[in-house]
Each structure stands twice: as structure tokens, then as C-alpha cells.
Image (tube, rainbow, N blue to C red; front, top):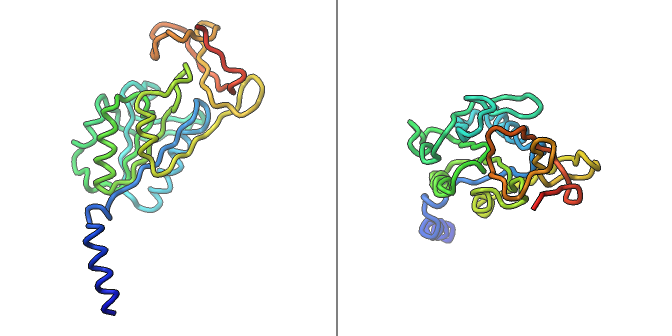
Length: 206
């Protein structure tokens, strides 16, 4: 018993409550049409069943639905659009929430990284979904730093529309042609669409 008490005392000295209370970061990534949003919402539904209090955020650049996140299979959930990820830390009564979920994280600036660090330090379960690569097949926005912080990573793949193999790339098509490497990440006024493709079928114009 004496040894047990000493062990507990030493444990509390080495691992103070502020450290033991740290949360975790789960990241869901992959190309477009890989089912990221479906997996994101699946985890949130499970959290809801467990009676965990949740906040769901998305970037204001995601205009598919003003105050919702959507998946390609038609599923929807209410979400709070943000221009600046710092707004998360200013949310009223943030301490009362167990789960903080952020969809389409690639559209935020790297300012999201210290916000995530703070949420983890507060003991939150943070769930992030986003594209790990942009249409150029380059690391997308803050995603490399977010992935480096993750406690768990789920990297999904889609199905290549050209050959049916696993797809890990998001092929941008503009006015019927593959996009150019030097095109802007966000384009206004062009007939733009995306296809999931494997490395072999993916192409980019130089």
C-alpha cells in the first residue's frame, strides 16, 4: 500500500493534471469523392449518441450550403461558417463542449494550427477533415502541419473515374481540359469540376 501511494504521488508530480487532461486530434484526409465528409459525420453521429457536446465549424469559403456541411451522398449537418479560425477560441462557453469538429480545413490559413494546439491543451477531442493535396498534387494549405500534430490519421481513397483503381488525386477540369499547374487554387468564372484519379491517370498541364 505504501509503495502504491508513493507511486501515485510520483505520477501526479511527473504527469500533472493539466497534461493528463490533454485532448486528441483525429484527421480524416484524402482526395475529393473519397468519403471524407461521410466519415466525418459518422464520427459526429457517434459522439452525439454518446451525449458529447459538439461544435462543428467550416470555412466561409465553402459555399455549397451556408450553414451546413454536406457530403456527396446527400448527408447534411449544421455547421458554423468561419472567416478566421481564431473565432473558435472566442466561441461562447467553449469550455462546455467535448468535441470540436472542423470540415474542409485546407481552406484555412496556418493560423488554424495554434488554435488546434490550444483546443487539444483544453482537453478537447478535435476532429479535422480536409484535402491533403490540392489539384496540383501539392500539400494543401495547413494540412501538413495538422497531419504532423495528429494522434490518428485516416487517409481515404476514391475510385479513379478513368481506370477504376484506387484514386489518391483530385483532377481539376476547366472548360473540358485538365487544369494548368499555375492556375489559381480558387477560380471564379470558369466551368470547373473535379474527378478522382489514380497517379497514372492524373494529369496537369505545365
